[in-house]
Length: 185
Image (cartoon, rainbow, N blue to C red; front, top):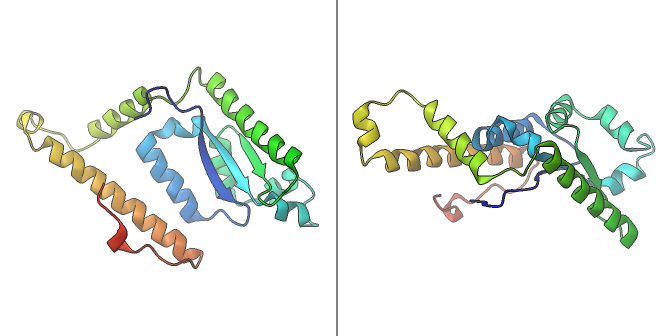
C-alpha cells in the first residue's frame, strides 16, 4: 500500500466545530489503521483567518481553551501535534511559514516513532483485526471462501464509513452522498 511509509497522517478539521461524529470518524480510522495511528498523526486546523479575526480568541492557546473535549482528546492522542492554517492569506511569508510548520511536525513525528507509518504497521493492524474476528475452524482457514469473507469485511467497513459521512454531512447541512455514484471497494 505505502512501501516507503507515510511521514505523517493529517487530520484536517475545521476551526468551527469538532463534533461527536468527527470523533466517531477518528475511532473508525483507529479501527482501520490501528490504535497507534494517532501517534503518526498531525491535526491541521483550518480557518486561522477567522480565529485571528475573533476578538475573544487572541491566539492558538485561547482557541484550544475553548475547543470541545472530543477535539482535545484527539489532540492529546496525536501528541499535541497541531498546526493552524490561514486559508485566505495572500501573504506568501505566512503561507510558507504554515507549510514549514507542518513539514517540521511531520519530520518530528517520524523521529518520535523511529520511522514512518509503514506498510508493515498497516499489515500488522490487519492481522490483529483478523485475529479478533470470531474463532475460525481449520476448514475455514483452508477454505477458498476466505477471500470472500475479507471482501465482505471491507464492504461492511465501507458501509460504516459512508453512514458516518452521511451523519456528518447531515449535521453540517450538506447535500448527502448519492449512493448511485459510490462504487464497491
